Image 1 (cartoon, rainbow, N blue to C red):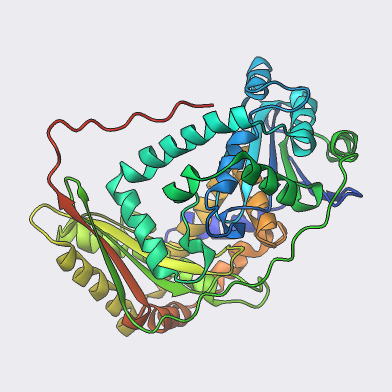
Image 2 (cartoon, helix red, strand yellow):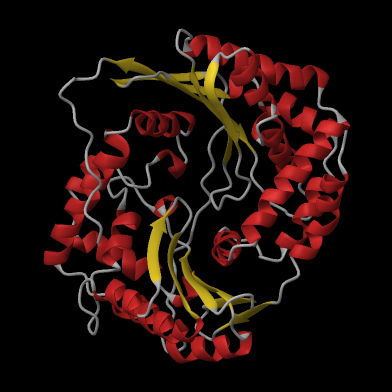
Length: 451
């Protein structure tokens, strides 16, 4: 039975997207997007560069992430490490992350401290000082991070091998952190080249969400960022993964307690927000399989048959590289094998392909998927994240308003159709973890020293 609460969520969700948002563009090409949110005297400021591992070349994998680290190593006027200390002294917090499609730097501060954030970000956008000495120290930190996050984590090893198996041509096959051999041979000049190539105002979007006045933020942006010259960016050539014409498999042997399986299917990403329907149907399909405790994978494989300890499904429609994967991963229960779990997952997919989903199930999943987006938008940080991710991928933040309506328009037939079209054996890649004995004297690596 569909409850009134779910129907009410579906009814009020579109209203959540109509907060005051204004967009500006400076003469040097920098885009500024400001969302006013006056619930508390706080501001979140994020600088998004449209440069990630997608833009790297073989032999220099990981350079986008290395440059992210170097951005905290000082300018002509700010000493190494001082950036973080200045933000902390102002009562704020800051960090950064690198992904396939972008690199983002962010601060959360009391609203009166926004000028400090802009001053520091504009300074390192234009005046970063990458010395050989600081680079030689930081590249060791990045290599330690790779050892800790990937080489010391069996499931991370599986994911890395999975990505390089499902993608043969597309740069999404490369790990964001980089291959160890590339890191070992990377130079400070490689980082300088990346900075000079991609770090420009006409390749950046500044997103501000909080208790601010949009026009005042615009004037502040002109003051600090407006004098930074733009420069010509390299032409980004299309990079398309050839169609897959047969099942692919990879097995990773590593010391671990439990086996693990990761399955993926090539599926379309969002291209035209006004015309596309399949990406929204795929998002609903992911919710049908794994959107909540009562979703099919958890209900059937974890609770009832107990063939798995956990099973998850996921899909991200927004990709600057125009390639997406529909993923399902899980850990078999004790006494069960990855082969048994894979068979059970395929059976769940076949059920949808043969019998579809009910209207009641579809309505419940729509409400849950949309509600999760609503809860995210209740956070200033995630409001900014949604805007920044869309803009960096080449879409407008304005499509957020229509997102609930596009999901609500998905029909059971569309969900069944995308399952039949894309979740097929010749389009399947499977990576499994074959657990090996763990050395009784083994000690997990400690996290690398933070910058």
